[in-house]
Length: 315
Length: 274
Image (cartoon, rainbow over all chains, first blue to last red):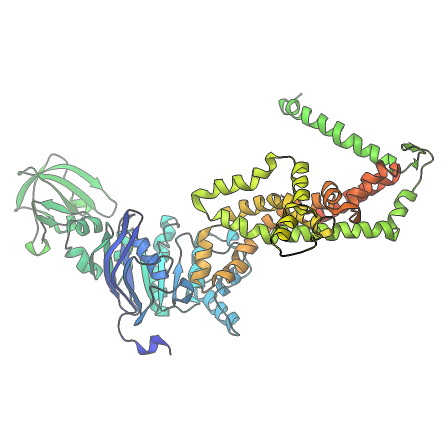
């Protein structure tokens, strides 16, 4: 029986999953639910355990404790080849001895293999490159082959391990948008691992922020960004001013005729916006994000203000 | 003179003196007639080569190729799992590699004699089996083709293991994860990923084993006794007991030609051989 049809709950459920390597706790008590059909991102600094978590779901590692459930079936004891989950590897891990078509067909059996390969190649604009070998492809093409090879398997869950990190910055933004479109089109749940918070915020329905082997917060990007529950989450997702235990993001801080007086210490040009760095009379630094034509000069006295609803209070 | 040539000169001279000149001499000998007490005489003759097509000698050649092929196949069968094991044994791999190379610390001749002491009728194996009451008569372990193949496999296994190890060690472990991720069981990964990607190592190992096995003379002489005559023994015989230097020279050139042809067949277009 196809579990996809009978299971209405989350496609993936982690129950208190921990992974311990020799004297090193990689993942601690992680519990997560990934809704079916969503674009879910795991974001965190390098070494936070997100890649280990992905490997636990793919089956390359076994959890020390805890359970992994896929569509209502417990899978943490199954080898990778028995899990209806596929992975796009960070380095793509394409088979160098096989052509593009050979790579995409690797996991398929049966009469419809060539049709399915052709459809997957078409979906990722790889038609015409069937007989190329991986070393004859550009970075972007290799990435699309890796995606095609995994998607052609029609997994319940697609794991993507920093698939954009090997691309140059310009291509990255373009591929990012394509990835989002692709996910919507194929309707497969994407579990996307990245250390790039901007990428995670831009792409995801839900993000989970990890730090030091734990999941700190899970929620829609906007909620996690605006209502961080820990200082780590607040700082990781973007610049944050801290005045005592009150946090406020630079884009919420305005220069105004009233408000708290401050002295501009530096002005940083960032292209579309500017960051005005100023010192409050209490001695604390604060950054206000303003349009380039509104920027004061260093040494000027200004007033800064923000509305209390943009504040977060964290110990 | 360029400095590069200065450093090239000693090796080049050594090669010419020890390789090219003797080969030319062998080539010339093979086209002369046999002297009464060894050596060579005029007139020029081609019959040393036509004699090689005599079924007696053709059979020796075929048998040599056959035995070398079996020894190579066995080395591959034994060497591949061993190389795979070493490549995946983490920090211990240097220890295992050292053990593979360890036999080279002793002369090949002495190690072959060692096998004679193990295999002969009054040797260790037969003594133990008889002592244990498992057999009455000693097993004919020595002086047959099996003993020769055993000696060759034993002697040349490291030449198979080392190039296989080198390619397996370089094999990207993520490719095996990708294969498993795409539903391939371990055996299938081995067949569809590991084996094709270490084809170069298999080829190199096969050549390194096959070529010396084809020309072997010591192993077949000591372990095969008079029953197993291979090309190497034929050549040696012509230069000693038979005193037919021109025919010995022709035989050894044919041996080299066969080895050369196989090397070229194994070399794929655009690929390095070793």
